[in-house]
Each structure stands twice: as structure tokens, then as C-alpha cells.
Image (cartoon, rainbow, N blue to C red; front, top):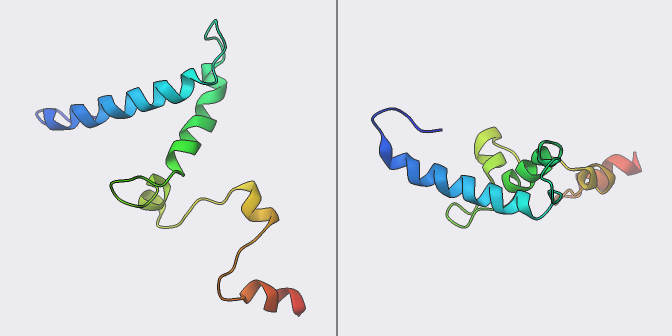
Length: 89
């Protein structure tokens, strides 16, 4: 989203729009009827992908933590071993 009297941000917005359109074009059917069903998955993929400029994901920058996926729920990861301690109790 750009702000009035601040045209410098237009380039960033246009770049994101192109990235989003490129991602959608990989999954949308030929008649382009299902883009609205695919959009949440594409935006989640974008928001959870590490960005080259910041080294962080947009989700992390917005929420201060990484997003939890289904795989995170099935296979929890704990670098300090807290999960194993919890499971043994």
C-alpha cells in the first residue's frame, strides 16, 4: 500500500505485485477462475519465505515469531531439548 505524497514506495509495491502475480500464475487454471482460492496459500508461502534483503520472513517481522505450520505441529522442534524433557514427564 502506498501513501499519498510518497511515490518512492510505488516501486516496492509494484515489485511485490509482480512477485505475487508470478506465484499465482503457477497455480491458477487456464480460465483464471480459481485465483481467489489459491491466493491465501500463495500469500502464506510468500510471508513465510526468508527474504534476501532482511534475512527474515515477513511473518516474523510483523509478528515477532515464525509462523507455525502443520509440520511444526506434527514434528515439534526444540533446540534446547525442552520437548524431550516434557515428553519424558
